Length: 181
Image (cartoon, rainbow, N blue to C red; front, side, top):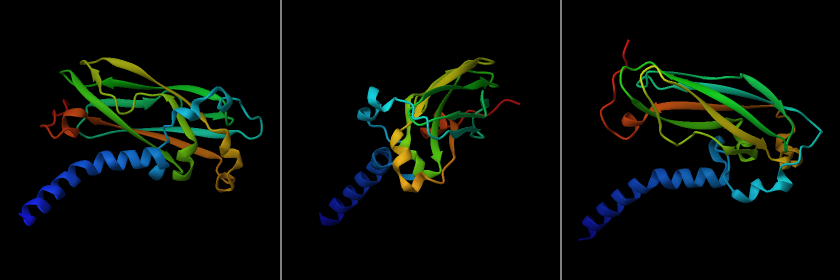
C-alpha cells in the first residue's frame, strides 16, 4: 500500500510540475517571465518617466514542426518607463491544411522580466491559420516605472522580447502535422 501510494503521489506531482512552474515564474519573474499582476496595471503606473529611454528589441522563432513564417513588424523601438507601446508580429501559414499554433515568450535580460508588463498579447492562446492566411498579432506593453529605482537595472539599456511559436498538436502530444514544402 505504501509503495502504491508513493507511486500515485509521484505521478500526481509530475502532472502538476508544469502548471506549478508556470505559476512560480509568473509570480516571481523567474527565467525572464513577465510578472502578470493586475495591480501593476493601474493608471498611476502608466505615467511616462522622462528620464531614460530603453531600447526594446523583438525576436521570433518557429518550431520545425510548424510550417509558418513568423516575424516582428518592427525590430526595435525606444520607450521610457511608464509609457505604453504597441507593436505587431505577423504570422503566415505555409501549410496546405488548417493548422493551430501556440506561442511562448521570454524577456531578456531575465532580471528585467519582472518590469516588462504586457497588457495584451497573443501568447499562450491558440492561433488557427488556414492555408496561405496571414495575420497581424498585437503586443501592447509598458515598462514598470519601478525599473528606474532598481540598482540592478542601472546598466540595462536594451530589453529583448522573444516569441517562439509551436505546433499546438505537437505541443499537446498528438502526432505532428508534417510541413508542406
